[in-house]
Amino acid sequence: MSVRVRFAPSPTGDLHVGGARTALFNWLLARKTGGIFVLRVEDTDGARNTAQASEGIIKGMKWLGLEWDEGPYYQSERKAIYDAYFARLEAAGRLYTEDNGAVRFKFSRTAITVHDLVCGDVTFAPTEEPDMTIRRPDGSYIFHFVNVVDDIEMRISHVIRGEDHLSNTWKHIDLFNAFGANPPTYAHIPLILNPDGTKMSKRDEGSAIEHSYMHAGYLSEAVFNYLCLLGWTPKSEHEKLSRTELVALFDPEAIHSSNAKFDLKKSLWFNAQYLREMTPAALLEAARPFLAAKGLTWTDDSTAAAALHSVREKINLLTELPEWTHYFFREDFPFEDDVRAKLTAKPENAALLRACAEKLSACEDATWSEQTVHDAVEAAARDASVKPGALMPLLRFSLSGQARGPGVTTIAHLIGREKTTTRIHRTLHEVLHASN
Image 1 (tube, rainbow, N blue to C red):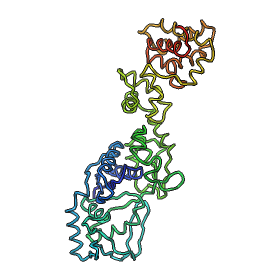
Image 2 (image 1 turned 180 degrees about the horizontal axis):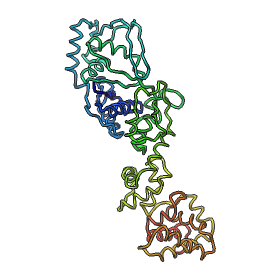
Image 3 (image 1 turned 60 degrees about the vertical axis):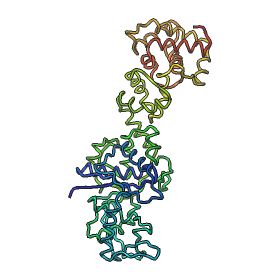
Image 4 (image 1 turned 90 degrees about the horizontal axis):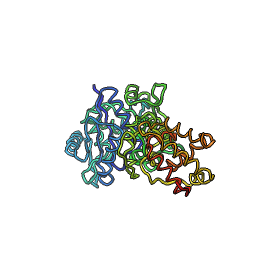
């Protein structure tokens, strides 16, 4: 029997970390076995489900690269199928209608065992619970009924879902038995907890895929990798693993039975590792929307990519790039207060900057390089009888308006000779109020 798995979210809000990890584990199993990954939207609760939430879930899945093979199927469009299965239970004498119009399913009242890949065999004693409502007075069906019907219709072979569903699984097996269908193989995965041990909710930091990760400047590959490790430890010497490696290593029986704790710092660490390995072109492509949001534009992709790449070791998120590199893309960058203070602290700084400008302006555009800049600064330092280390900070302040960033020679090389000398003269005029 071929593997067929599904992700079946209820569209009541954005894609949550817990839901994303559930989708991810199902996707991994499908890809590992050459099976089918089905997307099914369980939108039978008209009071709570919204089209916006459905779109948000799909958007989040696409961002994570969790492409599906079938679907999305919407339960709100499958009522005729549910009516037919309802009639089968009715014909078998397993249903009765209450005075208020709700229809209940008669439990078998026998012991039911759930064979679970993560939790092991779990046996539920004959229940004393009231029989289960499966159809509301308004004719709409509840989750448990349509969930089982769709699993039968879609030939789902394995169900990987949160362990909070385990307590209800016996109800589903009772329904499977009533339809004469074999239940799927279950794997109930541990919940994701906050660092303090409380259950992670949709309101907690780091919980929403779109707002906590997509908009925050994470790379989808990094989030994918990190979520895989929440409740599962691949048999590998490394934590940073590609999708291909994760697919090859995935084993649902190796999923932990204990709850996983979310660690925002660890997710940032993963993102930083992925950022550091990006090519300049790939980093620019990923950063485009975040640069555009700050009004930063450019005409030369190659130079812009090199500028971003020069600070890749210093950032954790794509959203940090504008702050670290804005001066590469504009000439009206501000001078930070501490930079102004350091520039004006010593009266000789103006003369030192003028000496730098003279040496740099004498360089040829055709041979302009980091080495050219380095040599020119060393020459200026010799003429001024100071060490090059005395000039480099001043030059950085003049070219960027801030005290952090890539190497000074890198900045000068990337912006070019003309902009380098122009920015020094701007510093002399606007900050040091010295003649050029």
